[in-house]
Length: 202
Image (tube, rainbow, N blue to C red):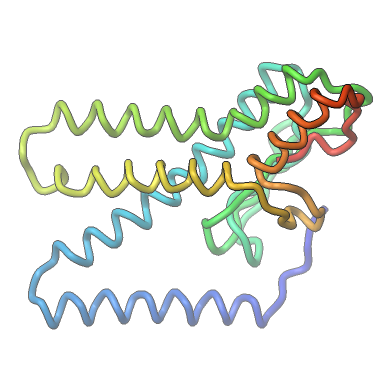
């Protein structure tokens, strides 16, 4: 399952992050206002935290459904860190803008179990929205108060993007987004197709 790291991909990631840092520094120097770069950084942190919560939501639902998890990957690009916890392989990749959870192949997958697994990511984002909202309500006006809205906005963005149906590649396997898999599940339920699924992958 380990993908070889591509030196070109590492350079692309490095140059992209360097360009982003230069843009943030230029905005700060030109405006003499730290709030604009801080708002952009909080949005990026919110998106990264949202991806982690989304994938952990899928993983938690799989564990609750007794589906053994093969791999959890956060991010795209070269692998920065990987490790194992039991039989589950965890990967952290260079750019935290996507991820996937892959379960061991199941001979028969119950439609309700599949539905819960697919909605687990959105539920994870919903939990983070709830935490951010509660934190926002309890904080008195202060420096961090202004940036919580961009973190919550990032979660709404992730929910919408994940529910849009499209094809993608995750871990070298062509798979559909949560939205596409939900449509396929609904179409299968309407047509009476079997619920056999060897990937059980999001």
